[in-house]
Image (cartoon, rainbow, N blue to C red; front, side, top):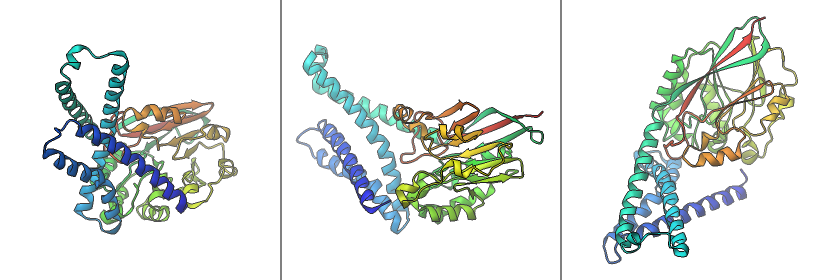
Length: 387
């Protein structure tokens, strides 16, 4: 990413992060009595929590330690708390504004304002805490989702193809070796013919992955035809060359803007992630150019991390496109935004003779919280006409 673009991006992110936290701070501080030593204690603790994620990420780049990991974990959870506290306080302030103009609140509330304010604060803290705890527990238990797809091609040598699809693992400080081991075990239990990973295997910084050699767990993946992957935007954030080299050393075959024929039975097409333009100034090849010389009598499977311009796959004779990236918003109500951005935010779609599946992912970015979906491993069974 160009330096000026990077500076602009992080400046905007920091301004938004600071503004949201300042708003939460002011609203929360109004509950603490004006003359109280608790105000100072609250302020100090609040500031330390707010800066913990940024401080942890900075420290991680110089020296990975228990301290840097702890800061990142605290900060990651705070992002979830921050998000839901912001929504709660915003809703309360909107109701107060409506009351100012319409007299919405009954006398019971207006005559006991201070008491109601403290009760409301306790309810908000309790509800948000329960949501975050439930969302975190949810991330610990990936589910296997089975999907059967009939491919409209007459294949005599292959009755079906069993594919394990796992997207957006985001291995790093938050999603570590133990979770990788759990995912690998679940994938192997499916006894798949093929394992596909449509991007974001590694989270932002590759250093924690290297330090703990997390991807050695991926060497234990077992399938008839092997494990194949494409880059996601997070491989670029952490340094795409180092990420690709490390994954390749751990038996993950990266397909980068090319097509390969596997055992003369099917074709795998892998696209470079769209982030290549932002981070390197490069361009990915047009899909039409990548597939121009392939054998279209074979089933053609495409991996493209970000599910944009879906009609391109249909126009170029792709039978199945697999994507991830969206996380389906990861935290409610962000799923409503991803549903507006993407033609498919999560799940299955068919356009003509082309089938699509967009996974919500098995890992997560930022806060280790999921409140709109279960982390998923896809057991995809492709069936063919055997005539």
